[in-house]
Image 1 (cartoon, rainbow, N blue to C red):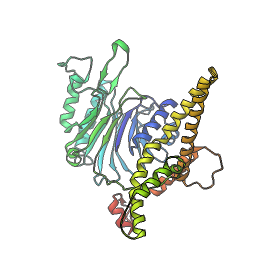
Image 2: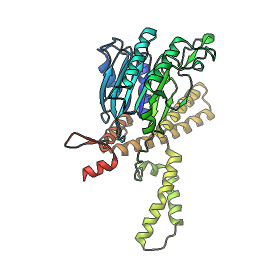
Image 3: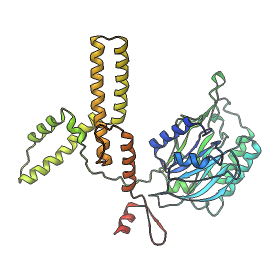
Image 4: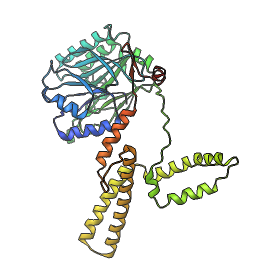
Length: 404
């Protein structure tokens, strides 16, 4: 994912913040915004730094005390804010591995028609402004207004309100249109039983320059999850170069009882002609795919497997305590053996990945390994370089040439 905007309907709740953390970990965005946070300007820095550590941000608290819009970006992204109002923040954005500078406007439309007219005027003004008129431009967020009759589950297909007509005129005057998207046609629901209403209030709209520059870009409206609004996401699909990762052998494979037997059988069955060193080299190369497949089959998603095995162990233990029989005792021992084996493999995996050489014997605190692993990944990754003229170099080819 390259760009996101999400109306989260309040961010003071710890449960919501935990949900956003999980969403960020899964989606891995580097630029976007949260709207309708209801977080005070005093508490905003602490919450933002807790959810987006190391990220930079800008907000429109000068227009609202309720935290209407948070603009957020990873340090690898260059952002210059060009316009702010009560209902929008516009900026110029330079994303890593994208040569073109983008214009992005995050929107949180008002419920009041008078304020909505100000939003339409702002968008029309921005469309012709020098900062945006010749650049790819994306508008995303909660506009709080439908554009077509079928975007309201409670309206007939021939209805046309004044708000819809004013929005339609804005779309024409600003020269924008919906980005092709996948996901639900409705992005908001009131979830009120028999009186349920669903509408398309959240949108991703772009200008002609955007369509010409990113013809394969796709908008995605995800599941609301912690909110009653769907998150708006943009995938640019600019053909980023896929990094070929080297083969790595993890020692946890040695603890599997079938691994040594498999390797022995495969090694002895491979016959290559040539010198002894060449034969060894060919056998090792052939074994890579076999080891990868074995690891994928037995240890893929090791964290999830450990969690599931532990939950099953707890169930078997409750069953044993409630009904101590030979059968329940056997199931408990088998569940414990499976969990212990997977947990040991998980600890070995993170131990090797984090390269921690001084862990105490018996310490199973994998949270430390997670932190160490993430730290090493951050240090080993070159996202961009800055030359003597303060120009950002972010493509793989340019980085290589600059280093040389």
